[in-house]
Amino acid sequence: MPKSKRAKLVSLTKVSKKTKEHKGALISEVQQNADKYDYCWLFDVGNMRNEHLKIVRNLWKDSARIFFGRGAVMAKALGTSVETEHLSGLHKISKNLKGQVGILFTSSPPSEVTAWFDDFHPQTFLRSGSVATSTYTIPPGPILSHHSSPPEPFPHNEEPQLRKLGLHTKMVRGVPTLDNEHIVVKKGETLSAEQAQILKLVGIKMGEFRVRLRFWWEKGTGEVTEVEGSADDTVVTTVKGDNAVEESEGDGDESMDE
Image 1: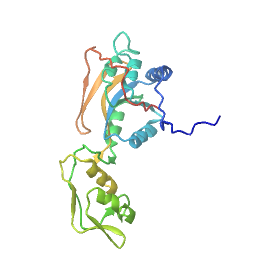
Image 2 (image 1 turned 135 degrees about the vertical axis):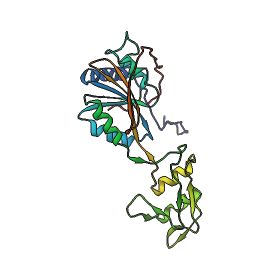
Image 3 (image 1 turned 90 degrees about the vertical axis):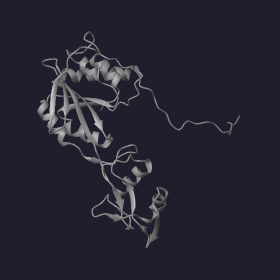
Image 4 (image 1 turned 45 degrees about the vertical axis):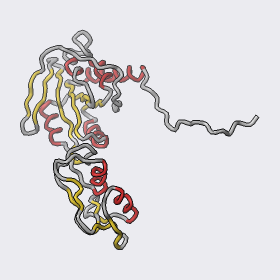
């Protein structure tokens, strides 16, 4: 009998849940790196971009190991109390593994690590909901893309998208053109989705990707030190107290360990 040709519902995506084996492997890997390296750093990221985090991974691959996301699993690996911690003092790190944070294992001295990350802050595009750091205006005339140097006029086939984003363009000799200046955003304004998209299209980067180092754990002493301030005014304080917070294993952070 021939197969039915009636319409069938077909799922176009297939996402497998993280298995217990995968979590167990991640826990084991975190613990192995805790045994291997002298320091464990906890960090978060400003203006998160995967491509910049990959650069950090590549530049540190010979002297460090980075895990990002899956906070509850990483906390379990480090231990969430004095009784369950993998090595002395690690539970003070795990109690802060909440949200979009990661851990970095290395034996490089703290002064070298903080200096490197203070100096690494590539420019990036702001997303909608971010606050504009300056006013940006597109002047009258051909709309230029600043993705290249020198800037080049937009191709004619992108004119409909520019109009859809609110720019009153017209075609002049095959180039999208403005008769009057267009204020895209003013300093201090919260970017809408359309404003963020315009800035990205024309190649204007107002944001900075930054890895913010928050704490470091030292294997030799078991102490955890909090990092505060900026590159010009860094303050360190020793973390006291043993109160631990355990996250639910339902943490939805995506694992980015490699």
